[in-house]
Amino acid sequence: MTRTAYIAIGSNLGDKLSNCLKAIELIDGIPGCMVTARSGLFRTAPVGVDGHDWYVNGVISISTEISAHQLLESLLSIEKDLGRVRIKKWDPRIIDLDILLFGRDTMDEEALIIPHPLMHLRRFVLVPLVQIAPDFIHPVLDQTMTELLAGLRDDDQSVIPIKEK
Image (tube, rainbow, N blue to C red):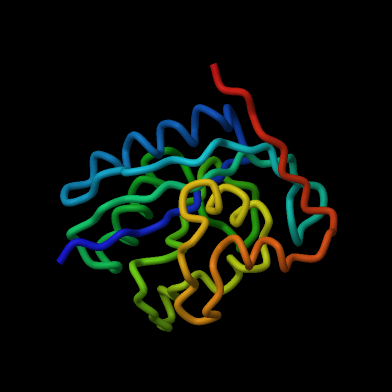
């Protein structure tokens, strides 16, 4: 069965824009997956950490015939291939790929929670997600992505569009 999955992409080390674009290209090459939409990319303030450089963030949608677990395995492999080294949670990263949504499925396992448990609190996720799926309804919160974004309080989560060449 084919599903639509939404994947958050971010980088705050090295050539952040190139890291994100290369990751999108590699995701499109996963057997059984095809990128179907891409948000703009945004310069975003780090959230929940101090002393980190700003990020480049975006969201893609893919059409996939593989399971959520297989997709996670492929995304972790792409992160590793692009040079991500996992030492501790919230460290700066050359690339970060998170499954936000996998169809309307829900999952709560140690290695994989879908929908992403923090996505509805993060402007850097919701702004690009609203660009490509404004009316998608969160399978747990039962609100559209547009409604979730509108409900965020106005805080220091700066999200600035990047003009791509």
